Amino acid sequence: MTASSTSTVEETGYRSRSQCGRGWGKNANWTGINIAGMVVGFVLFWPAGLVVLYWIMKGRDVRDLPHAVREQFSQMTGGNGRRNGSSENVVFNDYQQTQYDRIREIKAEIKERSRRFEEFRAGAQRRKDEEEFNRFMADSPVR
Image (cartoon, rainbow, N blue to C red; front, top):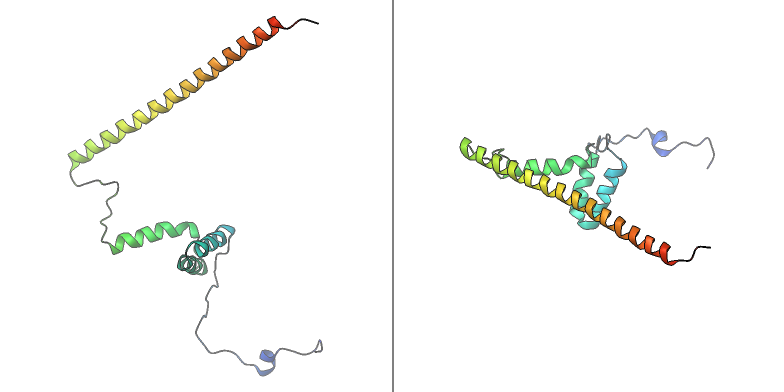
C-alpha cells in the first residue's frame, strides 16, 4: 500500500444511511469511577453491568444511578413521597421527632462517656507504665 492511497470509504464516497446508533455515546461520561462501577457491575451480575454501561453512554455519572433507581422504584410502587415514616398526624409526628431527638441525645452521651473512658484508660496505662519504669530504675544499678 502506498502513502498516497486513500480508504475505500473515501474513494467511493459511501456513507451509511442507517439511523441505528446515530449519536450513541456521543457524550459518554468515561471517568475512572464510572469505569470502575461498570466493571464491578459486570463482575457481580452482568445485567447490572449493562445497565451501568447504558447509564454511562447516556452521559450520566454512575454515582447518580442509585438515587435514580430509588426514584423510579418509588414511582412504580406508587410512593407518595413521605419519608422517614412520617404521617399526616401532626401530634404523632411531634412525638416521633421528640423520640428521635432523645435517641440522638443518648447516642451523644454514649460517645462522650466512651471518649472519657478512653482518656481514663490512657491515663491509667500511663500511670502503670510510669510505676513500672520507676521500679526498674530503682532496681537497676547506676553505672
